[in-house]
Each structure stands twice: as structure tokens, then as C-alpha cells.
Image (cartoon, rainbow, N blue to C red):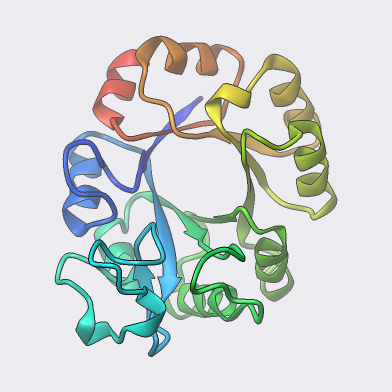
Length: 226
């Protein structure tokens, strides 16, 4: 059965990656949410997609008290989404101002999940294979997913995810085809496709066996799936 995950919360209806968006995801009957985590100067786990705020300030240069009131921390989102699957994307690419070569953020996310006893309805994903490898080295029982850019060779990216022992492969929905889904499933990996809002495309992805649809419009996806 294909499940629906709200991309940065129900981000068409409410501002993305805010508590309001995650609450709305529940209202729209999403099975889970996807969110982005970064670190502040005082090493808090901040939920925000970009490395900088809309006013240009880098999150890594700010302390929690400097953040806008609508930018939440990970522990607050976990409280709100206590009955949903939470796909935590760790942002860690070299071009960002908060690139983290020491993988502090991976360890901090794992530590928080351990403190909260929240390990069975969580998946940690990243475009950085090093980051999710680090998560697995800290806790092999945590589910991890490798995010793949549509510009990459998908077969090679899937092979890296398989070699790393990861639980899931996250391709862009336009890169999905029958062979890719079959190869992932044959290797024991789930396929979580991002980010798709069109009902016909959602139905097609379900037909080829995708395990999760990541969407900005969980209500539309729910209606598409009947």
C-alpha cells in the first residue's frame, strides 16, 4: 500500500516547514511528513529548507533566540507529529553555508531520537551519502533513505544506497520507472518518490509500486488514491 507524506508539511496550504503546515498535514490525512533540518550557531536542530532566512541571514550564524517565531525546532515538530511517520532530511551539501564535514548534525539527530524513544516511525534521509552512512554507524536500526537528484544516474545512485545498507531510495518522481522500482524492491529497499502533486502522476506511481508519495498537497493525493 502506498502512503502519503506531506512535503515540508501541507506546504501548499500553509507556510512550509512550520508547525501550521505539519498540523495541516494531519488535517489533510497524510500518513507522514517530510521536513528539513539544519543547525543553528548554538547547535539547535532547526527546521528550514534553505541555509539562509528570507532576509539573507545564515541559520548557522544565528542562535535560537534570533530565529523568526515561525521557524520551529525538531523536537517541537516531533511533538506535533507524534502519530505520523517523520522523514527527517538532513541538509548537508558543500555549497551551503552550514556544510558540516564533521557530521555533527547526524549525531545530534540520532541523539534526540534516542532521548525521545522515537525510532520506529522515523526515517532519516539526505542527498549526502556520507551523512546517512554516519547515521547508520551510530544506530543501524534507524531507517535511512538516500535522496537522488534527477540529474544523477539513478541506477548508480540506487547501487550506492544498496551498498550502504540503507532502507530506502528517494528518487525524483520524474526519474521513476518500472525497472528502478523493481530493482529497489528486489534489493529490499522502499521507494519514496518526491515531489509530485498531479493526480494522474500520483496514480501512475502507485501502479508501478512506489511505497510513498511525497507531495505538497496531501489532500489531493488522498483523493487521487481514492
